[in-house]
Length: 472
Ligand code: HEM
Image 1 (cartoon, rainbow, N blue to C red):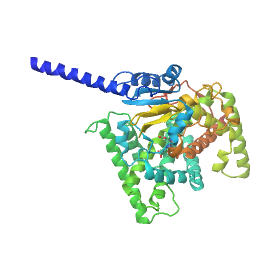
Image 2: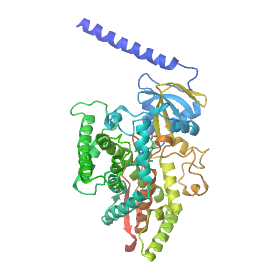
Image 3: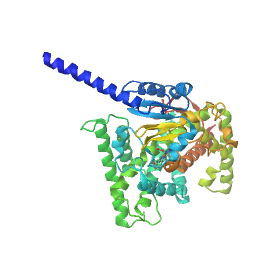
């Protein structure tokens, strides 16, 4: 018994020594060239403080405290990795613009396990550029925008027809349903029905493992999520096979067609099927959150709501007189509505920042970023910095009327080679949703708060009491 105790105590002692030795190395390597900051506790670093701030009403308080102490670029240790945090717009721009020889994406292990090795979110080099280019061009095409506009109008009308006035409806849930249908239609041309419901159910199972422990054994969360992904891939493979059997359309109807038509013939069916599921990860949640946040901010700013409603009503009346439906250019021509969306992106920070891993030692603005370290380009602090925006915590869509959106102080969709290919889709969908909502309904919003971690969302799913305008 005594021997077991001695072994146990020795093992713990040795573990502590090794941990501290590694920690000392991490701290001492290039100590004088690293940006200021602290790596916190061995192994856990500053993760607890980061997470507790992220859960609070001011998630940027972790950054603000360190900005005052160390400046806009500082070292830390979060999520198990030594990390250089940047809340400096120029440094973040450099990070976004760099290619895979300098930086590659870095995600938590559970996420990379779920995404697989060939996902567009993790691959680098020519294959990433190819898939990104093909997908981005398709999402920008007039033909897809026409289709999205038709689909979105139909799904929005179907959803709104069922809204009841005698109990609150949850705008976050409603927008989630609509945006998922639009996304799946654009990716694999699936219409609402049994297979769509199946996909939705499996997708929820799949994403519940995104922030799980990276343990893949039967019964574990990660294992269940991977099983759900397998079922979804099977469905997409069936769709691909049906397309191959009937001859692939040369005029692409969806992203699958675009990738199947790829002239380089680099992309296998398995890779395409896998990527259709992985593309749902950034697309599924972000757009409904953007729509929900815009409704929240408008509910709290009556002058903006009034101006937005007037702008949309004017267009609706004009189109009604012509007897024409709205097309995508009509929606995007609504300048105040676009400013509302832009301001929601700035203030809401649907994606708070991006993580990269350095592939070599490099200096940016005099700061050393050692090979193997992560860089966390945290957009939220830049979007809420008072030297970039007056009264940054105030919802003020008018600020965009004479402000340039193409600045490194505004990067809600990232930038460089990994700039979000869904940027046009997200803005168009939100414009269509806002148009139909404000022209058909008035509403009273119940109290709700924004949760910022692990993803941005409304705590109570944004309950609204709605009234049809015609009924008033
Ligand atoms: C409000 C909505 C959205 C926001 C704020 C957003 C934001 C972002 C950001 C910041 C990135 C860059 C990630 C990085 O650099 O590592 C990104 C990448 C990406 N987004 Fe979006 N996104 C939105 C909607 C969408 C939609 C609707 C899709 C449709 C499929 C989409 C698909 C993607 C894909 C595939 C990537 C990875 C691109 C690559 O690494 O090559 N996103 N998004």
